Image (cartoon, rainbow, N blue to C red; front, top):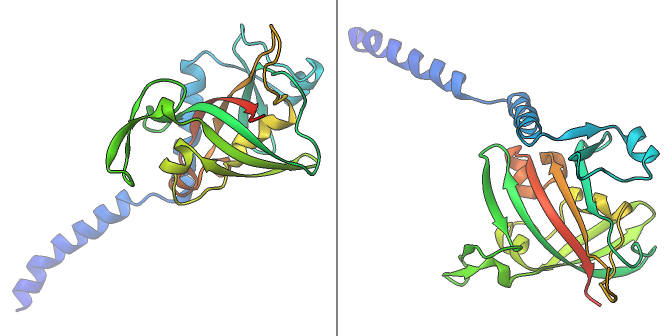
Length: 223
C-alpha cells in the first residue's frame, strides 16, 4: 500500500503544480488586457492624445491622423468620427436611440457581433441563423448631468449579451460630446464614434472575462 501511495504521489504533485501554473489571477488577466489594447493601438497606427489636448482642440479628434483621446477616469479611448446633427441629449429626459455598430474582441482578435453590415448570427431563442443587419439596436437613455443610464430595448446586443440589458458604460461616454438628432437636411450626418473599451466599461460578459473590445458605433434618435 505504501509503495502504491509513494508511486502516485509524484503524479499528484505534478498535477497540482500544473494546475497552479495554469491558474490566472485577475492581475494576470488585466496585464493581458493592457497588452491586447496596446497591440491594437500599435497595429492600427493610432495616435493617442491626452484629455488636455482633446479639450484644446474643441473636443475633437483628427480622424485623418487617426487620433484617439484616452479618457483617464475610465480608461476608454475615443475617436469622434462625426459629431452628428441636432442636439445633445436633454437633461432629465428619457430618449430612445438607434445604434449601428460592430464589436471586436481584442484578446481573440475576432469579430463578435455587428449590425452595420450583412453578417449571419445564430439566434438560439429562434433556433435559426439571421442576418444581423436586420437588427438595428435600440436603447432607452436618460441623462442626469454628465451621467447616463441606459438599457437595450431590442437588437443584437440584447440577443448576444442576454445576461444583462444594461448598456455598457463605455457606450454612453460619447454622449457627452456628440449630438444625437436625425438627419433632416442635406449635409446632416449621424454621429459616429470609435471606442476601445476596457472590461470595466464593457458588457457584463466582457467584465467577467476581463476582455477589452473595440467598437464602431453610430447614434441617432428614433424620432
